[in-house]
Length: 366
Image (cartoon, rainbow, N blue to C red; front, side, top):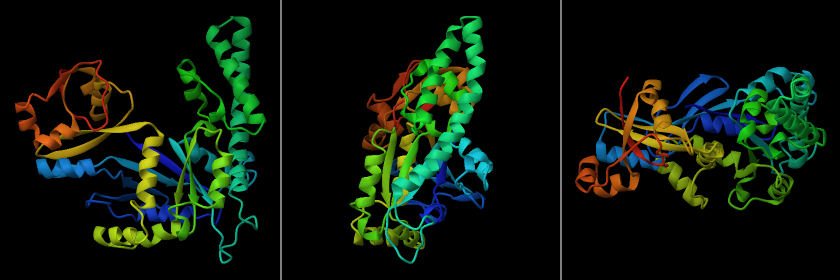
């Protein structure tokens, strides 16, 4: 399962600096791979010390972490929803992502001119929000006639349900609110997948602050918090300037010393990756053997067969059972053999809900 996040933001807010820091980031605790697909796309590993600890016990030939794909989405100007600038391309790129990382400038610096002449992260947020909302409104209005006709002619219950949600989206978008502010339930998941509204995507507001505010935030961050309190969204405070410096350091020891000097437990890049991962309700399970120790990404609530299907669809189709070891048991007992001796290995069936950190071995028959 791939995770794809799009970075958006107005010019001179630090978006490119953060993207460059992400795509130049060295592994946080081990020499995991990094690759660049295109100039504006990077694939980075999700930091997970559990993978390292498992590998220290198993000593595998290969270590494969789970990854996040980061896309630097450029080209937004006022009027993007109507195709101004690179508007259509920009909006199309966002539609392909799983989550949005919205970078907001929350620092003063006379040497970096803001595109609108003053520092106001709430205004900047609203500029992009409006363009996305207008595009979503266009999508909703184009969709409504189809279900309106079905609801009237055939008294179709699903069509009636669709119209009810579409009207709620229309009202919210016309009042300047994003689609994610509308409460929905699982019964309308089918419609949301069809609509794929831009403002329904999970969003992480990345407040780019000066170095001194990296730990505590500042007045601009407080304004952003107030502005997004009614949204289903999260906020991360990060200093792009600090991240740019960290990205230039070659060794883990140098990066750790640099962070210690700033009283930072983790780099902003690491926090961003982990926050983006949790934003989509994703968890990790592991497979471990002499050839490979690997992290796999699944959704919270996935069953054992669904988790097996991430490795290969045949694993899900022919699922028989899963042999499960809790991560902490694996570490405490020092490996699979000793876990078995202690009677801590569990055999789970099709209904088992996989937990974060589970170590799994699947039995299947095709």
